[in-house]
Image (cartoon, rainbow, N blue to C red; front, side):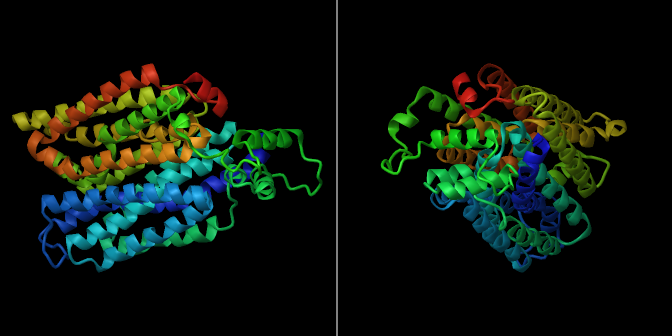
Length: 462
């Protein structure tokens, strides 16, 4: 059987599980156009136009929900399974979207964002684990980058819909994706590794056969399948007489390799958030309005959304060719350059220089920043984290890294409007550029290359 035939159902699973990611991407892109309306004199809220403080709270509440969702879903996925957890995640997604059309105050929008963020916490915690546990080595990177590809597609959908429809209509439209996800994902299998962890040997065999596209009813399984199944059984140390074989001890956590993996994961996920790209995307339309771009804010945001999606797609094409570390380095370097160009333009504007002939610079530089960050910096940390953390600690490690991501995201989203007021647009992006420079140094010296390596080889390289 060819590798393509073996991978058929792995790609199908990767697409189905990420339908809900499109919905969450829409949740993160929704504020861009919506905040312009909600802050204007035509605000539909009963409390009137939202203040900068209101905007900061509504924008950042998605991260509060994300932290809560990460903690709950990490526990739930380990206890009840990755599949059941992902099906459960669709519920807060629906609730979050359905609150928005009936919101009359910023508080109602904050509550909606908490529910949406809770869903996002589950998505970014469980999907990388789910994907890593069913994917073969040669497709693991591609399937891992689907998370950000679909997330960015969701952001673009929100940008486009926000340009043509009111913010409440956008909520009704995108909420339908959660229903589609439930219909599609419910037919997929639980991961073989989780089933083996819970001593469900027969179900694990059926699951692995499904993901490897082995349909023969004969007991004569292909050699590669028997080898992989035996290897999985060995990895999880199945034993009916030793129920504690898979329990986590302090010795496991205090292992030097584990400590290094955790530290690398926490730093690269912090770098991803503190590079400013995610926060700036949430406020794309506002940023273009402040920067003096000649294009309308919503149209500029759509252009950036398209560029971001193209960057994510480029990442899926390059991740198994160029490698994770190389893409992270190039992406972070390009993000630094984009921030500097954007900062120089806005600083010249503040100084009073005539930059009318260069009014295209904000859109081009910001688009370049989002494109190049989507190739690696905003896409690959989730893949790397799922690969470098030992399987036994993968759920806990992902939870720790994702909580750090939400904390950093909360700070960025809450204080970005304040940073613009205090530092100016130029000061804010220069600060982000400085963080990216530190990230380049860290990635070069400490992040291992994981392309094409088995999990064992990756752990040995740490």
